[in-house]
Structures are given as C-alpha cells and as structure tokens.
Image 1: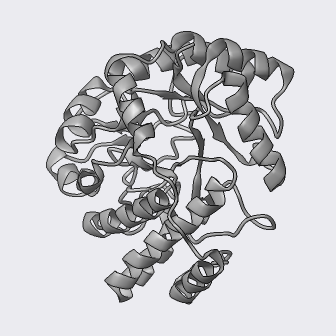
Image 2: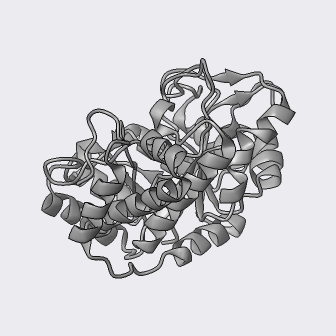
Length: 345
C-alpha cells in the first residue's frame, strides 16, 4: 500500500493492538515520538522497529523533537541533555567560528543518539527570530534575534544532523518569532508589514531553503492573509514559503491537534493539504483523532510524493565519529555558554 500524506503519533511506550490495526490500514508516511513513548533505549528501539514492521516499509521516517533545552524528548539518565539554541547564540556572539562549530557538533551528537535508536528525522533547527514582547514559546529555543545569526547557526545544526545520518526539519515556516501567543493554546496574530517580515523573520529561512524538510507555523500574518494561519493559507505557502523563501522541500504542517486551529481534525487536515502542505502532522496519540486525520489524508502523489522521495534520498550514512572525544570537545566548547539546567555530556 502506498503511504498516505500524514505523520502519526502513538499513545504510549508500546504499540497497542488497536494502533497496530490502525497503522496497517491507514499506512502513515511516518511516526513522531514524544516523551510518553520513551522509557529506555531498548524499549524505544523496539518500538521504532515494530512501527516499520507493521506498516511494511523499512525506510519509513521516524521523527522526534530533539532540540535541546526545554524541547528534548530524550534526556537523562539514558541520553545526554543538550543546551537550547540561545546557548549557541551566546557563544556565537563571543566567537562566530566557535559558535557555528559548536552548533554543528551539537547536531552531530544528537544525530548519534537518534541514529542508534533508528530515529531518522529530527525536528530541528528552529529558525524563528523572536522580538521583544513575543510569547516565550520560542524564547531561548531561538539561536538569536537577527536573521543572519539565526540562519548561520540553524544551518550548522542541520549540517551536523545530516553528517550523522539524520534528516533536519526547519521550523516554523515562515516564522513564529513575532507571535504574541503560544500556538499550542490559541491562534497568534501578527500585524507586521510585509517589508519588515521579509527583512527579518522570512530572511532567516532563505539560506535554509535547500533543507529537505520543513514545518509550518500556526500563525496569522494579517498583511498577507487576514484570516488564515500559514499552515492553511495557500497565499502564504505559495507566495512566501515556496516563493520569497524558496523552500522546495517536503512541507509538513505543525501539529494539527494544537489549540491554534479550529474545526475538526478532518477539516484541519484537508485545509492544510489544500493550502499546499505536503504532509499532515498529528501528534497527540489519540486514536479517534488519528483516524480522522488518516481518513482525510490522500495517498502521496504528485509534487508531494516527489518531495517525500527527495527528502528520504537526502539522508546519508553517518560518518565516522569518536563519540567520547566529540562529547568532551562539545563540553569544552559550550563551557560557560549554557543556561541553567543543561549539560553537554
């Protein structure tokens, strides 16, 4: 069976009988993991392997949000904790070369953790550019407050992931940095003029347009589309994400179960795909919602299928790495640059 244009979650650390039947019948393109799915390395590796076995595709992508800081699904005691994007930004301010090198090495180390588990996609880097007064949902997840700095560090993190055999997902296109609300809870509305957006928020994504995968923002930009968030706005996807930014990778929605969106899950799925998203992302693991998304998602075809195939083809085998030496070097580089509650090894 050809995969359908959606990525699903699961409810817990093992696939239930009901979920197994759902996966076989619905053929999602991929799986996204959260903390509720994670207990220990062997358990998680078995879950990933079983997912691929159930849907019958050995190359089916398995995704996770492993940014560092507040957003990392894997952590101690089984995996290292990583610093948030802002820590790399602080190092970059002191020494640009070191900042870029650290972001790249951090990405490479995260990839080593993920690849050992069979996880092939990381929802990183964050290329959002926050401004004073914006909601803290991005906050220290961002690399900085200028587009050139953000693009440099985001690009380095993506390179590190790729060197480790993990595909990066750039987010949140075309920018979540100005949002004054958390889109997990309600719909943010940004009234900034287009010229300013193009020179700041959107500009950070342009050097990253060649990345294989991207994720949309549930944000309304009233000077571009007065009513619809980027995820469901054909105008923003066509003219900004595909046009001004030039992104031609596989475009997935942000989580369709988030509070920013209205309507049922089938309606949300149809709206995102009709607007130009290639893939619908659903994360919360609630089977009834998963079924509604699956029912509304068509088989991958046309440009979406081409982009999906190109994304998978971009993944390469990990290069050689002395993991212990690399972790020690990363700790040395990040010494003094990390915020409270983060470690480097």
